[in-house]
Image (tube, rainbow, N blue to C red; front, side, top):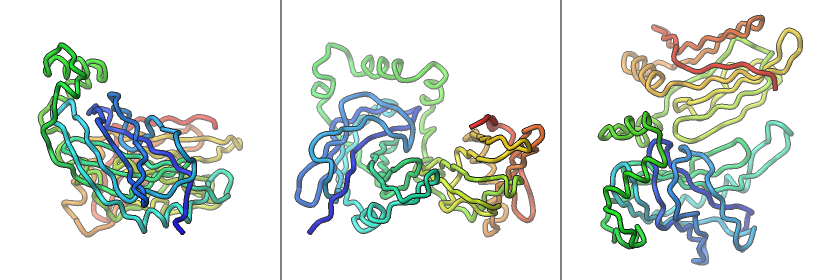
Length: 317
């Protein structure tokens, strides 16, 4: 008997690269279909939860394949793909779940998120609470599609239709970045998903109770520790955001949030890795508890880079 789980579909696209899903279907073992939300322009962030369809049975078998067709506004391209999902690893995740870091009780994945990126890349994640785990990464093909059907016969040229959609989705500065030809090239398949021998450390020692780490590839982890930890991350791609939960001298419960500048942190990883490709890397967060001042250093045995362009804030929980 096929085991059933409570889960719902959702969708996402990178913030600078809005798309419109023509059709996206998760195919179950009995050939029944769960539709991923479609029909609206979106650019809500890579790995983020978008809209959620709560239709049909709450409990259902896990999907075995994915069929997608979408339009990328920045590229002026339609993409289509039909992909087999990794059934065993997906079932294992939903069977095992994870320990919720706040309650320390077992929780479960309850979302399957499908992401659409420039170049035809498609990522699929399982998501529950603050945990996001990639379960598949694919590449669709560019296809021709009836523009009149897509635009619902709107009396507007394709160029004007695209320009209007981009104006609605992006501010002028974002449009300038997104308009650079192939500025996305290499990100989603190579830069975001490259695995490093990386440890994430801090100087707060036993003050730290937990760490939320989000990565550029859309994955996210949450770790809890009652004592100091010198290796927090398991995923080991490049972190996009880290939130340390720690206790001040006056016993205040604090959060220090670090949001990395994409260009700076990518360049830092590439520089250290290219000079010494087999050396493990460490990302050290130095915090002065009395003043809450924070600095971030990426280093190996031979060299170090102070990460200066990140946005850092400390606040009470």
